[in-house]
Length: 434
Image (tube, rainbow, N blue to C red):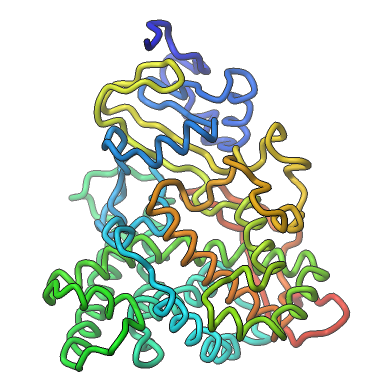
């Protein structure tokens, strides 16, 4: 039975509550609250934070619709409150579909064959990390959705990247103005959404006029096999893109920064990629590159892009003995769980080897959320990030500035002012020129 006592938490000021303290140091404030009040505490009158891994999993995997994900990613307006992006890739229509091994293998084969050409266009140039790596990630996303029969066109991948960057700019603005008030960030997002929808509709129309393949080679082939019609097919792909187009690029930022900060890790991945890339492309099993996949998992542990996940209570529910009412917000922080010393040895230390032991992380690891959809998210996300990391390390030595890279706890966990270069592989450590 739920207790009638008040859920403990910081009192804050009479006028501003805890908003000022939270905005000043978001993760530090949440860490201090967890230490003082435990794994479930009230942040303000309408917000509860859950840091217990088992309870967090049950909330994220809720099948009774007692908790709802907040915000529309392609809405053209900022989601309410502090809700971040939904779980990556949070496309519920796509999550219900089985990602077949032949489709993923076809996707992996195209990435291994063609992605080096995209990297070559960036080589030895000093670039802004977030925007450049979002655009690289967008190429992989476009290939998964519409990669067959050839490499996705530049218009579509560019539209995906621009939509991601425009969305994050809106979410990070912190403004909660009425929709009718002009705002350049919202205008940019609406324009980006229109361009993405137009590019996607054109690509889908062209493909639907062609005969279908014997087996699906990308997501469009798979949706098309369901005979959903052109409008439903375009909507399904747009929903998928909405959930995929921002978080993978942020994860790639942290992976590039990690390769630069840990040159021995980069060299070890380079050696592994020389022999193992072809096997991963053939089998769509990223763990065939065991150390590379472990590095990806460790980077996602230390720097989960979706560092704060939001759910809204849809009906009266009990969490840890506390009654929550409809309309209340539940915040779950994978970042806090991933760095909890009760659940991880030396949680702040970069150590890919901890993931070489099967199941070593237990339940305290939630980079892809929880539930059936998260398993599909993890499968696709791990495949893409493992392949891209191996391809980068095989052909280049990344160099970044500044080092060490500082995180910014905004809508996503983004490296602050990251700039990078892809240099030729050398035994000595490289640095970015000032």
